[in-house]
Image 1 (cartoon, rainbow, N blue to C red):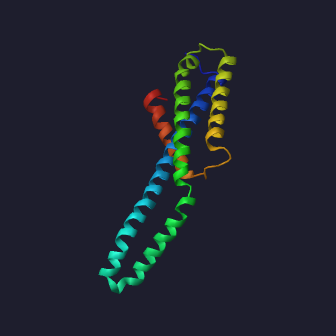
Image 2: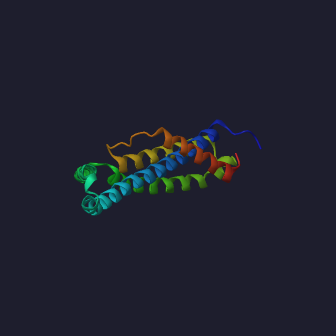
Image 3: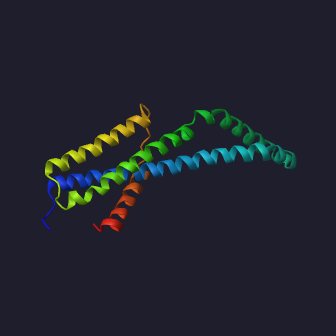
Length: 169
């Protein structure tokens, strides 16, 4: 087989970037869900056990007062924290990008085998990019996700594992 053309390489890189992006959003969603659940569990435990703990361990009343105050403060600001709304947004964008990834990964065969012209490959590559941009704009709008370099590194590692397992490259 001939060496890949620059257009095949660009398509592959675009596909890889989309895989990394999907992985990144999955990790982001997982971490956001963990934080949201942790806050809810903390609030549930503190609201139900603090009064009881205060009554049992009177000599630690200051600690219990701080815990109760912290839980009341967290309960008041919880609705302003981004985790719950972020979960819905991430879930929707992730679903759309996974479908996009699957549809363009299927087309990789024709790209890799040279069944498409360079012009067709170029159009496909930019279709991926445009549809990804549209999905991000549609679901995130003017909102942004704070960049998490640690999540990105893990997403790239997962993408490399995926490529190794399914494409052996």
